[in-house]
Length: 296
Image 1 (cartoon, rainbow, N blue to C red):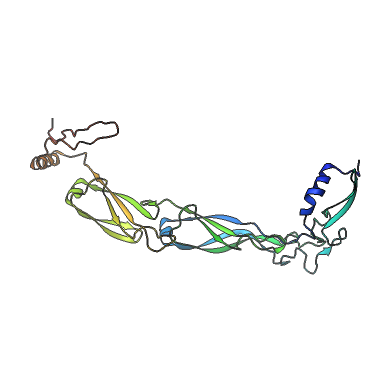
Image 2: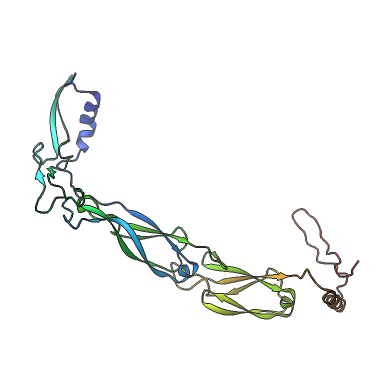
């Protein structure tokens, strides 16, 4: 049944034939989009930065300028389909003679052939190349944000229009600060005496050295907020805050003289046997501060 007409042919004829493209297929097609990752520091996310990134991509072949042909030659009209890009055939079926249209196998539907393809691009009209692209990264970006550069992706076959180039942001972990949206945070350990008496601390921020006032009587876990020292707002002006959590360090290796001084302080404050503050937890357990200063 070499000349037979199958069910698939009938289905395509009655249901798919009207959707087939008429005329030759354009040889030049749009190129693919490209996605690259860009690593940035917290300070670059806070203030924005311009980066130069090397991109390996497809560019127009400089030898044939995208024509796919060797210099001095040009595409030739397909002798099989006469440039239409399609061929028609008539087949017998129980319905009678049916004409079908399909892409020309000789020219793959382009309507032309390239007898002398460009040697540098193998008839693709494009070659792989590395180029440097400058990307403007605005303040406020964070991990996962994608920046689009239209028309900077891969050039299409036969010198077709380029796709788009996307850069996905990856923010590196900072040694001191953690990011909380547009705010940044850190923890500073201070001696018990500094928390009790108050002091001035120096902290290296994203904006340089800043003084942090630690008021007398600062409690463990207290947060000091410095405004406009965080990350810039991505869709607006201004910046987030720097939140500093104070961790009070209680000495654990006191010598006898230091212990005696603390006992004297406890006596002056009538805290030799403190009752402590009663707190309620999820289990309904009450805690009482044990006597750590009586020596018993």
